[in-house]
Image (cartoon, rainbow, N blue to C red):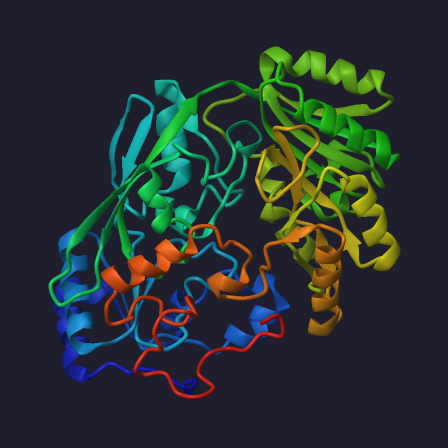
Length: 474
C-alpha cells in the first residue's frame, strides 16, 4: 500500500518517459523499484523503521544530459517529485523517495571529462575508484574518498559525504579548494544549467540532492604517493591511542589514514582477522613508504606490536585496510551482530576524558572507532591541526536510549552529526544552510527535487498529514 502523500505517475507520463530512455532503462516492476528506491539507510534501525516502505512509482536510467533534461522537463511540467540516485551508498535515506514519484538513476552518466593538471572533471555517475585508478599513473590521487570508494559516485559523495580516507592530510570535502566547480540542472519546465565555482559550491555540497541536480563536478586532486598499510596492535588501549595521536599530529610523517578500533571491533573483520592477534585494540595506518619503517620502529619502541604490513601496490586490490575503516567499520559490525548501529562524533581536546565518561555512563553499549583528521572547526583535537573524530559503534536498545546517548554526548562536549534522521537540518551539518535553502528556491521552484529532506523548504503540494517520517530526535 502506498505511503501517505504517494505520487503516482499517469500512463501518459510513463509512456513519454519510456520513449526518452528506452525499454531497457525504464523500470516499473516491483522488484526493480524496490531496489532502486533504497540506499544504506538500514545502517540505522530508526531509519530502517521509518523508510522501509517508501517506494517510487517508476524509475529511469539516463545516460546523457539531453535525456536528463527531457526527463526533468516532463516531471516539472507534470509536477511530480524527483529523487536522484547514483550508487546509493549513502546512509541517511538521501536516495529514498518520501513521496513516490520518479527515481532518476544517474549512474550511467559516468564519463571522466578531463583529468589533467591536478583536477578531475566528471559527470555525476563517475566512480571514485575509476577516478583514483586513472589519476594515479598521472601522478595524482583523490584528496579524500569514502570507504565505499569502489562503488561510490562522485556526485553522491559530494551530496552526502563529508570526508574519508585522506582527510588526515587534506581535511574533508568542505576544505576550501577541494571542490572547484559544480554544474547543476534546475527543475523547471525548461531546465537551465547553473555553474557554481569555488566557495559557491558550498550551496550544493552535502545538501542530500535537494536543491539542484549535479550534472558535472570538478575536484582538485593531490600528488600521489606509494602508501604502505600497517596494522598496529596492543592489549592496552591508552598507549595505542597515544601512538595514534602522536603519528596523526606528526607533520614529518606523510599519511592517508589513521583509524583506531577498540577491541573487539577487530573480531568483526572476518576476511583480515588473520593479520592481527585476537582481543587486541588496533590502529590501521596508511603512510608513505618512505616513513613506514620508522613508524613501525616507533610503534615497537612504544611497546606496541606490528603484526602485519602491506606494501604499496598498483592497481589497488584487496586486502585494503581502508575497506574496514570509516563507515565500513559499521557495516562489518552489523554483519557480526545486527544490533550494532553508529554515531558520527567529533571529540574535543579532552577526548580521553570523554571516552572514560561515555564508557562509565553506558557500559558495554559503546565501542570506540576513531578517525583522526585534519582539523575541523566543530572538533577539538590532538593538536591545533588534528581532530579526533570517529564513528563509534552503539549497541541499539531503543530510540529513547539512543537519544539519551546523543544528549549525554552533547552535555560533555562531544559533537554529534546525527545519522538517524533523513533531514538535513537534524543531521548536525548546518554550516551554510541558509544559502542552500536560497538555492532551493531558485533551482527547484516547485519543490519537486527529493522533497521532504529539506524541512524548511515549502511544503510540497502533494504532501498530506503524516506523509513525512517523524523522528524522536526532532
